[in-house]
Image (tube, rainbow, N blue to C red):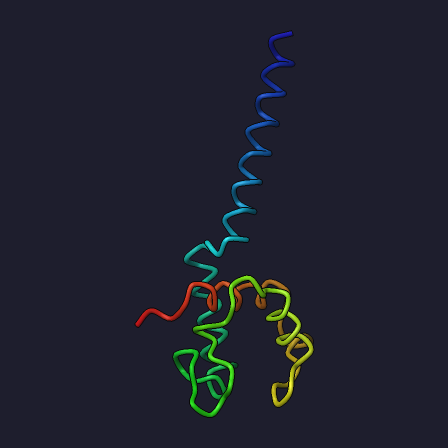
Length: 110
């Protein structure tokens, strides 16, 4: 029976690790690589309208102040577009959109 206990322990540890990872991402803690990828995507595709540091006086949405608890709103706006913003859902993969969210949540380092 010791191997059964070891198996249960291993599964418990794996589940705990996945839970911590999910909680970290939902609270806005993303890997440096993911934030960097988001920054690169942003610089190439989003900065012409939203500004090079996520803020433009000509765009009413200041991404530096985008509510961190409104991820669904962000995802919908990026994928389906909103007002003057075109939809990007067909151009970005879900992973790329998640990387953009990671960059917005991490904020631009001044």
